[in-house]
Image (cartoon, rainbow, N blue to C red; front, side, top):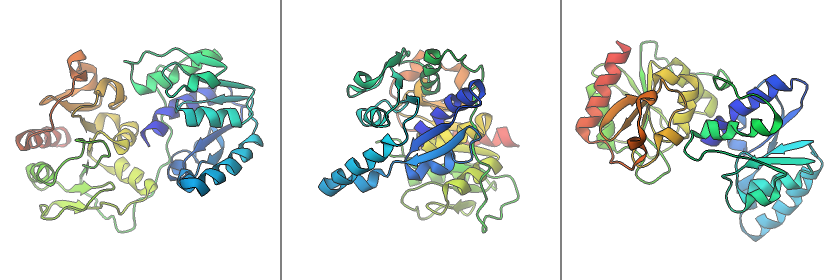
Length: 310
């Protein structure tokens, strides 16, 4: 999810510079809802990765790759930067393939042109480097065009509420039940909406409304848009929240580098090393690995969020 969101400003810039271009996006089905309503996207092409597992899946992938040849774009841009994505760009029959200098697994061998990136830059700025190859100016402010979304029918919260996304795939990123409880209790009577995909937690305070595993992607977008504030582990939904409400998003980082993979906006909030700062206030010391928040630090985060929404 995060990779797709980081790529949105590239699409917006291409659409603005080349309004007559027909832009297609090769994407996993799970993330299609993020881009199908984008005014710059003419079509989406599904990459059903889950269908390609095992020997039979490998055979299916060969047949699927042949369908890419019919696409035959003038230009293919590989923003994923993996051998797999570079091969798909080559299979598309594109006249020219553009990629990034920090691509992995030997992907650059398949590129016609390589955009130089600074590995310390934020991921959004790294991807925008491909615009240099096309002679397109980089936007002063990245544009994240996302669908409006639709609230779940049973989501009837009308008062101010805080969204907490505690789940994450990376080791050590996910918040524990004790951390969630400490955070929620410190918000007093403010409703805390728990969202994301993870194991449901028991024994949560009465102000927690548990929507874990109960929302579609479009419903999650609508909830983020309605939220008074969003607190999230370093995860795909964090990047979604930061794209929708940058000044009302707080990302909790442990070992990951918030200057490179944190929220994109200087106005977003970052917790790391026991400190809470806006992204524009971070120094190089925030790149170093840190520890997970203590329960007291979770209470401190909640107190600061409370002060920002009252």
